[in-house]
Length: 349
Picture 1: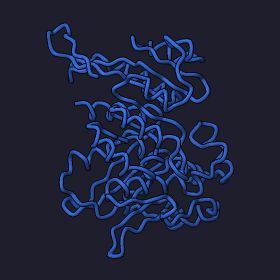
Picture 2: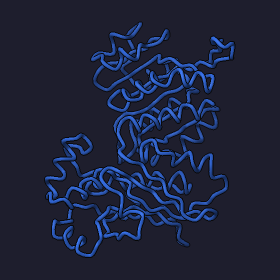
Picture 3: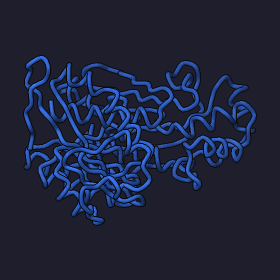
């Protein structure tokens, strides 16, 4: 499906056709990044690309083999208007007919079963397309299956943005740490609760901190996924499933959220020179992997004490390098989009 073309420097260019499922904040951020990085990617990697298909849940879909104008797509309200012909409304049919080489799947997360993203990714890989997702659900509910389908069809299934947005967690182990065995990891993986705890330290109540997180768009109308530890648990499950190669579900994680932490608890921790953090951990044990999400008071002797606001951290411990920490500051749709772009480039290079 790849098309070769010559550029101004007479280098051989490889052209890829891209498709999107989901075009919300992350999809639009990815579109902007693809536009901004187009010249750099062509010069550095000999890769050109065009977007040939976009499907959304509520704003229609478009298939345009000649290429969709991404500048227009970022602002359009009805994607049907961008389509050369009526695009299928059924997502699985859309995938089969989109004609892409790479598909970005960004439908809403399902903690329970990973659907519909899991079915979308399965169909994408079976159609011979590389697949990238920021959706944690299909990683924890179908990673080993999807990886096997990808290998069978000679394509890649990558998911860098599922944990800590675009920070290179999965690709570090995949490419930079050959033969390293992950023994345990500990981190602060939910930026929403970390922001809330920081604001509670500055005098806000729990409800006020939730309301602020909702006002800036990082907490849902129902914040239970964050404050009750479900988001952190599914991220722990994703890291365990992929990096430890042990299938894990969020329900397997011993989970306690921050809902019970009071202003008095915050004040008592301050008096001890400590701070409350929602920590995550998975560790290999003789009886198998044990995983936990729980609030804990941490002191300045730990790397977690200085992690403020929406910043996240994960500390890996391996059999060859000891401890290795990765920190991500101020995530947003742009950092998630970068993880998807990195997946694309890593899949096709």
